[in-house]
Image (cartoon, rainbow, N blue to C red; front, side):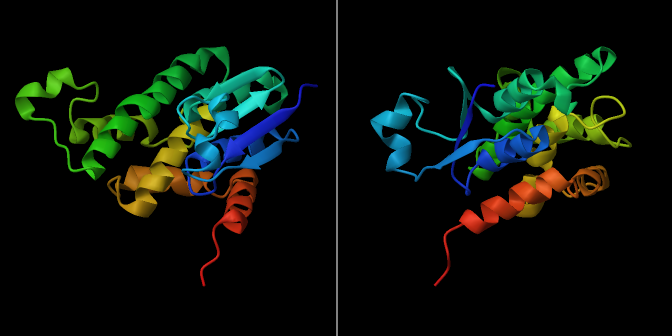
Length: 205
């Protein structure tokens, strides 16, 4: 079996990929990178020219971007059961890309104080922050899982966006978000990943 290498920093979106790797359950080597130094060094820029984490290397295959890593690992290790049944693949892809596109853009722009003028909303892929939150709510309201009746890779990625947003106030605390996150955030793989990353966090003096 091809070796898995995981490039990350505990204070990054690498936490999402870590959770996915723990769900997959395959052994992996971790490479912890520092912002501004090893993350921008030639050795890592050969892996990801953006100089950002996370990234994985599976044999000779390199995958960057959190959503792509989640989707790739679900496909590469089907025995982990993280791909939904074919009947639910539409929801799987729809909400995976919605979370990595409109949700990511809307939340980031809002955090930076950028508001799309109402008369230019059509130019933005997410339209408005409010519309994006309504769309996100539609993905999870009244559901245990996003794509069908079992947990899948989209729950890792979209769920991480919601969990992070609720923790840091970048996503509204709507009941649908809180209920969905409460249901998936007790998974053993998530808790293992958090424990690993928490242990790697810089120690406070």
